[in-house]
Amino acid sequence: MKNIAFLLAFTALPTLANAANLIANGSFEQDSQAAGTWGIYADLTGWTGVNNIELRNNVAGQASDGVNFVELDTDSNNSMFQEVATVIGATYYLTFDYSGRTGVPSESNPIDAFWNGTSLTHIFSSGIGEIGNHWTTVGFYVVGTGNDRLSFSASGISDSYGGSLDNVTLIAAVPEPETYAMMLAGLGLMGFVASRRKS
Image 1 (cartoon, rainbow, N blue to C red):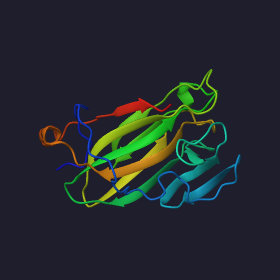
Image 2 (image 1 turned 90 degrees about the vertical axis):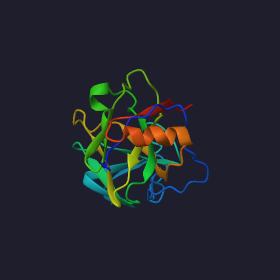
Image 3 (image 1 turned 30 degrees about the vertical axis):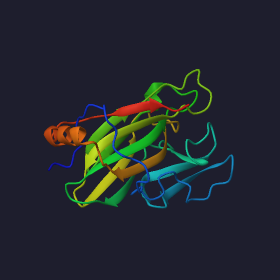
Image 4 (image 1 turned 45 degrees about the vertical axis):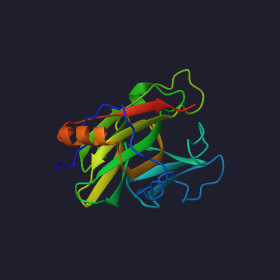
């Protein structure tokens, strides 16, 4: 099985209740950041930074989960990744919350997500006229290879203002039988994304 996301009709959600999150520190709460402040770090708990990671505690918007969130454009287009142990051939459901930065145009706000180096999405939004964060949850089905790399990268204008990331989860997908059949038939197709705007 190829280690790529694959296209599915989003008619039946996987069973998500009580599923364990395989992502370490997915909401970035394991790193201490004083309220109303931000800091730049080489790495965060569970995450390896490339050109640093900016951690915010309710600065220029509130977190979608807890108080901390990440902005992926400090002094350059930064990226971060985490290695995740999975079961070979097993299907997982990956979600994360994204927000464009308030007051910043869409050209500065893109974030790319990758599973084992394969692009999952290039997501962006304009923060012009917005106040605070406006989180959108984005989701994908991915297939495990035994040891997988999830990475996020800022991909807009490198101007120290960029999109924000929070609440990263990866759980074993337990779909309905009809959906599972579609998943098996859909292996090799790229790029399913389901999103919803958080209230």
